[in-house]
Image 1 (cartoon, rainbow, N blue to C red):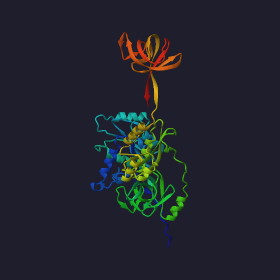
Image 2: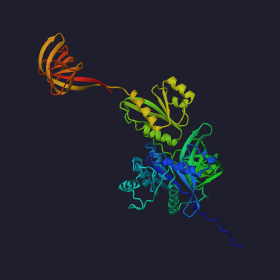
Image 3: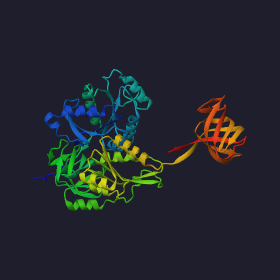
Image 4: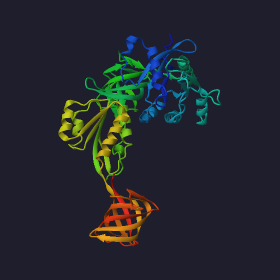
Length: 504
């Protein structure tokens, strides 16, 4: 009897992971919503959590076979540039969405550059073809000017005209995605331990820290140990993208994992071990960089008023985006220092991190503040501000900082005049005739009196006339008579300089 040969590891086809990218308001969210809701029955739609950053759909390929597609949901706003760059690296195929009305915009090129840098194949979806002002040919021409050459327009980049609103062309776009995936020959091995990337992390008061992982290869099981950046965590519970509990999930699947003691780093790679001993040995091999993050200070300068700031957000990805936008704020004579960041509800500890500073601020994005945090802030005189839109949060912060920034009062010259003649002097009041050499001379303004480039004193214009008529001001290259209140005697040849006090 011959010996039985050991089973060979067999690579099998896996679902493509697609990232839809593009400029804000070009229809990325509408396209993803249309695809998602046409693939999920009503009873299941309610199970999709707000922060699941990836989900699966099923579509028939060109051969009539039902195939899965995994979509990464990446924001289009400029603040989320890092999240888009990360998605371009994690995905297998990208879809660059461009509005048929507005054409190529800033984030369109930024998204294209991220795709190009990652070396990913991509498809262009020209959206909003149902709009009256849609001009597909103009979009193709503009893309060509940016060296993005579509099929039939001088290049080989596949593309599809669509309407995410009506659904026109969406089935064809999904079929095109599967065709590109077929050409890429995407394979996976279910027998291997799972590996992939961290898409998102969040903190729930009831269940603790969770992370959404994307499995690129292998199989993840409840009880496995996930190793991320040298930290090992035992998987206590697995949920699919619908929030349903699963015992195992395999490649191309987004999975929500429960069991972390520390918040994993978004974008980090993960791998798994079946036992604790192997997990600890793998974690010990990881060298943690001790380099301090130099971006905690919003401004490079250390002079001026220091404002301590704590940032909180609903999930790690949005926290990253909020921090990036805050780092853009530059206020003269003020230094904004980030003293703490985190995900989840604003707590007393967040207010305490301000070290009792009455100048301190806690910013919260899509989170609420506990009653204890509000009371503590009132006690210290600190401020808590929350919002659900990033730019509203940063607009508030910028206005608040401008109001707090130390003010500087300076003298700004409004006009100059050369004294031609002096007519009379009574106590401190003098009547003079002069010619405006620069700017304008105005009534009731303060003046400096200069003699041979030296300031000899100051005064105030209490009356102003031109051609024996009272006027409010005299303009450049005109002559005027004025009564000036000053204890310093003015002589022909002197120069008076009108100035204003300006506080900035």
